[in-house]
Image (cartoon, rainbow over all chains, first blue to last red; front, side, top):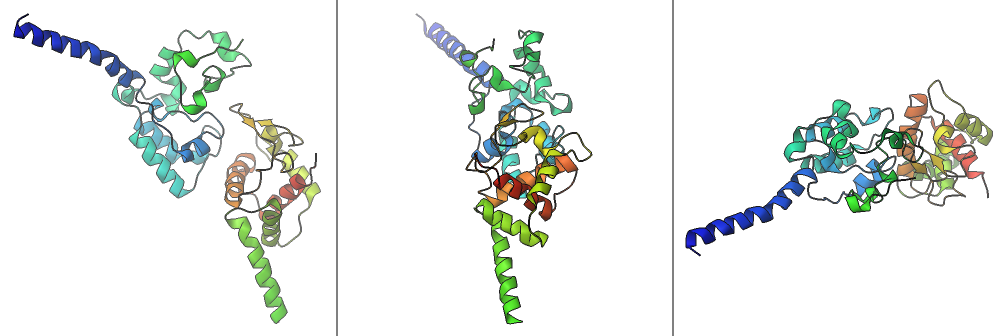
Length: 157
Length: 131
């Protein structure tokens, strides 16, 4: 095999190997461990949503309006707010999802969320077991740990 | 005069656990009573907890009546551990946490902060629940 061909094949091989990583990094992002304060304060009433679920500007607006958080007061002390904001800004959605700003900063109305869940029947959303789109744990058995992999999904009956 | 000062200092000291750090339910109750300058009234606490205060939710809407069993968040559906300390031993063991949740939930239910008296009444009522 000529040198040129070997080089070309090496590049092709590298490109093919990089593809799965690139798409995973874009769609799912690196799985970042949430700080305990995030799990405690932002996981008290619902699953602690992954930081990569929303763009930085969305997180900024949410953190600026915690006393009026989708109908309830979710406020935290200033020091905790600063810590959480810094983590969210540093780990917000990247790649394509960074431009995916949902109306009212509701992550369940993001283009990526709708796309990922387009096979879920309407009746299942409305069922007692699920109820609403923010009830991730109804199907995502390890949502509380920030794990949303396909193998860990179990649809309720 | 001096005994009055001693008494006042003792009462002031008692109020500190209610403001920060770990504290038993009894210590927190004492702190709220000092701040309210009166004893707690559990019956008043029950009425306060179960009533609606001009808005959509009562405390009981999420915490249940009586709050000795798991409750459920009215909006998200998330399970909430029983609020009465005798049924959930971690309840009211951290004064800062108590204050944080009073701040949030009183704003939701009443649109304002709860007074020290209201907090004392509710806490006394909750502490009175036994299995």
